Length: 123
Image (tube, rainbow, N blue to C red):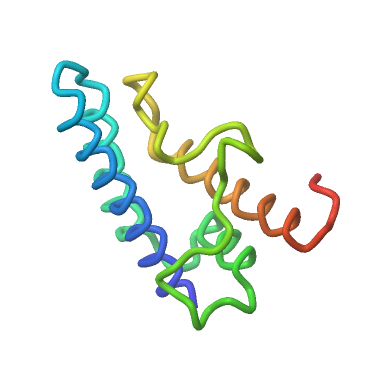
């Protein structure tokens, strides 16, 4: 299961990186979009290098319990509306952000989004 979630997360990061690439074409004078896209591609490669038993991947997998047939689509991801940030902001406003911190926030955000969807109180 974690192999699938690992690929799903990496693919999601790459999808958001492609969106940032498009924004870079729209705003060629703003280097933040390319910086964010490069950071997301770095994050995708990092995720693919992780052991499938990595605790962050396990959390993301738990958030998607029951939705495994839909991989590589992730149903529960952090959003600006719910968690106050999203993956597209990685290295956009701050040039120096660690991939580890992104993955931790992403895992926690996926779990919070799932709880919210299930109607549970978010802790």
